[in-house]
Length: 234
Image (cartoon, rainbow, N blue to C red; front, top):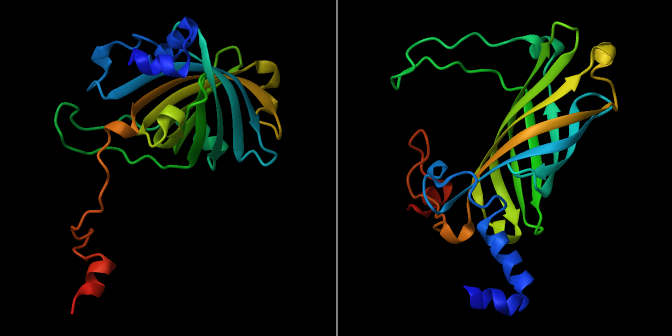
């Protein structure tokens, strides 16, 4: 492996930089016990930046710097959040789930989905991860009249570039924005910018560890065969 590094950049600094990139942005964090297998890459990061509402308040654009758990900058994220939630939705907390929690049985609440999100996370070496999924937002009022705007997301990794070309995985995030009481009556507002902070969790499997996906020959739901199979029958 060291020979490979040397062919790319024969200087000691070049070798160390390539080793750091291949180890990952956080070294030994999170610990190995957080990985289900050595083939899985787990990244936990936090982002600091700004959000901006669209003129119709339907979308939020995020532009944020990304840091590892030691506070070292190692990339940035760009993303768009779409919301069809009403002001009442943002103030409504779901009912507590009912039924046992220690057995594989229902019921499980089916919460309405009225928000969606997409994003790209670019790391220091230029490699990136793209993901899209669903989201849920809340507005929490503090006793002094200020607010906390809270968002949680659950995303599926759709692809990547550089060392993450062909990557599969999942990505979750939770973010907040503090709203001072002086502007509560004007939040949100068309075109408004605000400070935001998020925590990002990636679970990734790189292309070299993924078996080539082959389309299943099994019938689809409902017992219907694929059209190609039907057309090949006499």
